[in-house]
Length: 167
Figure 1 (cartoon, rainbow, N blue to C red):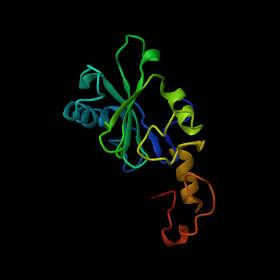
Figure 2: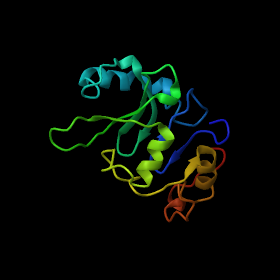
Figure 3: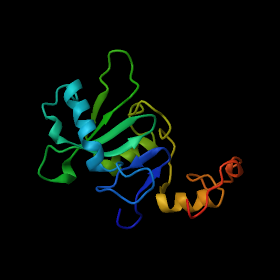
């Protein structure tokens, strides 16, 4: 975050720890998302077989068709926190919650390289498709220039919704 700032990998928003000065996204940060995700954990019982309570869930990613990603803070060392995912779409009888015995970077890498047995989320937009992290500053620059904010390619609809640096 210190180097690149807040941003996305395709449709996955990587949450900053604290609020940032990004228009319309003031609540999109770890603290702003924690209460809701912890409520879902408590309501649904979390990952089957995992006894950790909702206070152990710390969100770090959101998006990809309403999938939520978090750390499960079950160790005093954050490097040992596994990733948990709440998947919006699952097969019949499957839990919406899943745990992955790896950290955030390893999880993202394995997902984008399709190294899990199956797509770990209820959305396959990043499954087997390495995507680039694009900071929100760069997304804004591209949008003002009439480009697609995530790809940087020409946006055929840009003239319909002009945006300036003042917006």
